[in-house]
Image 1 (cartoon, rainbow, N blue to C red):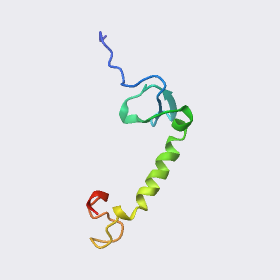
Image 2 (spheres, rainbow, N blue to C red; image 1 turned 60 degrees about the vertical axis):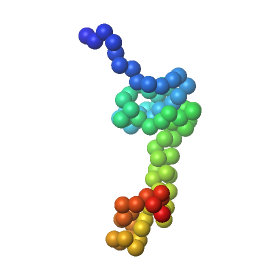
Image 3 (spheres, rainbow, N blue to C red; image 1 turned 90 degrees about the vertical axis):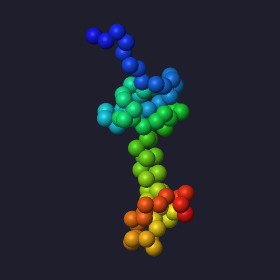
Image 4 (cartoon, one colour; image 1 turned 30 degrees about the horizontal axis):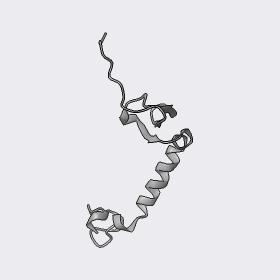
Amino acid sequence: MALFRKRAAGRPGEWYYCLEHGTVEEGPQCPAKNRLGPYPSRQEAENAMNTAAERNQSWENDPRWHDKGEGGEGDGGGKGPAAA
């Protein structure tokens, strides 16, 4: 048994959405690779998947990420908004 258990970084009052368990947790309980957050409220953490889907949709429709003149429509051309 280990003398010291490695604890996840975070503070009480921060809310996370665990991708592995599909649950909301106060303070990080699962590894960072399995969670979204932190969010300032439980309700925002509960809506994490919707927020992520909205951001993904916005990103996919952002013309700065789609250089149509370089290799075809929607391939991104290897450039992001900073290169535009």
